[in-house]
Length: 173
Image (cartoon, rainbow, N blue to C red; front, top):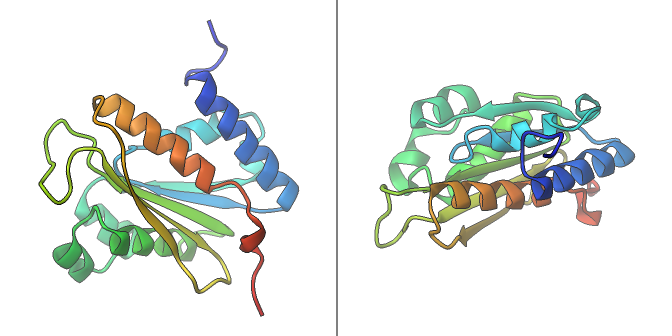
């Protein structure tokens, strides 16, 4: 039995995120929807995470995305909550509402319902925003529909990977 609440692979990656961001002198924030706080839970599973983890926003509803992160209603109305435009606004909102240097946002369709032909179950979108950078990083991924828990697990691992510092994180100018 592990000493951790979460699976070992998630804990190992969260440990890397904490250690590498600490070494880089970076604070991080997350804005979560379909992961429902799993990324925040993974980070806080690590002793000393308060050195780098500034805050997490769990904005499961569209109203919460608007109220807590400032996502414009027209973005949600036009593109939907599971869209590159929405997660980028979520990531920007997390940066604006925190003292973090970098933020990652996640929104998706974990199922078993809620999927459409254009956005089937397993569609998850991610965005990464770094303070001082104008260029957004965002991507859409299609995780195999092996059930709700597997999709949320895969999305958590992907979000943690996006929280690792990268050479491109240095402010330009």
